[in-house]
Image (cartoon, rainbow, N blue to C red; front, side, top):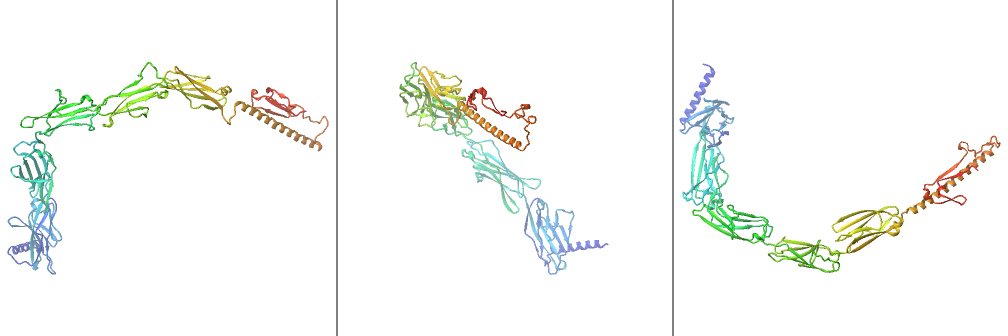
Length: 626
């Protein structure tokens, strides 16, 4: 027999001996500490601690873990000798022993819920053991709630199935409770019944189901129901709530209302309003709407009648009838509402003298305008003319009228008791008078020869003609009673003296405006400019003559100096004549040209005091040959 075989046999006898001693009640002098209960969640890892008290200078011989069923039968699951683990057949890979002798169970399942014992032996020193209960649990799924019926009739004398609640896969078996408006519902067999059902799944987990039955009343139409699952997890009590639901409760109508929806308390013409008939039953009953004095139906069934751009003709009494099919007996409810539409008619305008009239309104006359209208409440009158307001009242007195009186007069009528409610009308007043001329300038500063634009503004409420006192290019623009006329002319001496007149004529008379043309200060007219140019030309000629004289004097001094030094011969054959016209080398000429035209130059004084014609001033020569 081999040594390993002998060792295994010896170890087996040793463990059997230890087990027999334990069952035989042999004294144990080794203490083993273990918790009474260990909690673990299904699918997680459980650790069962085992802490033996080591004797002085002792070491353990072996650690053995065993499980016990309900009949207290021991079954060894695994053991450790000198740090090495051993499994009993079949080998369970989810079990292991830690260095501190604790039993580790991974991926805990429902079948792992047992009592586990730990036995520690220290050879001749002694041995000891203790036990722990492993409890497993699993949180159930969130409860689901659903309505059983689409609606419940409140008048039903029997209890109705309100809703069902279900929660899957919990361990230990959870429980379900019901709540209405967060108040716990308890069965009383009169108004509330709760029917629970527990289903054991093949996995060993539990699914719980509960049905709520209740006596539903009209007051429950706004009630909120939910259910809750209660369970134990890892030794702690926990809960999970479902979604909330409301119940569609059907009940008959007991009252009816008929109201007017409008943008303001006072209904006025032009508003959009809605007549709304409502009963307190569910579902909404059928309605018929009509005017009290008529039989024609306006809007059946819905009970809603919109009226757009309401007018005073829409005023009256409206009637709503309702037939509720939910009532045990046919019930007909009737409601009336009175609709009053505030109105304000468009004002009418009259005048003295009447307008339009074959007789013309002339300057100096008096005109009286009157504004009249009717409305549902006290009125206020205001006359206006192009933004200008007159004293309040329906009568406007215009005395000593003139062309300025002409224009559009508007009568605005308001109803002070109703904001933003007004009507208006207007009349055009035309006063026949001679044209009125307005010009931007009476005096125009110009320069002779330039082109200028003169503008004349004409106001006339009757046909008018326009003319200018001079010829030129005329531009005219007309808008309503205003005409703008512009003439473009060239300034001449004659216009500087006479000026320019703008005239306008209609059948009531003629008006005229005079433009005075004045030369600009500090500027030259063409005449002054010609004289200034002539003076400038004379100055140029004088400067040129002075320069020529200086040149001749210098030349003479040079010739005289050369003659004295003998550089020049006096014989006829060797004499050089500076007056010889050969190739113009012996001719010195100074030429002065005027920059003025012949007709602008005028007469210039000659060297001897005689006058020369303008035609002789184009070129001037000084002959130095003699």
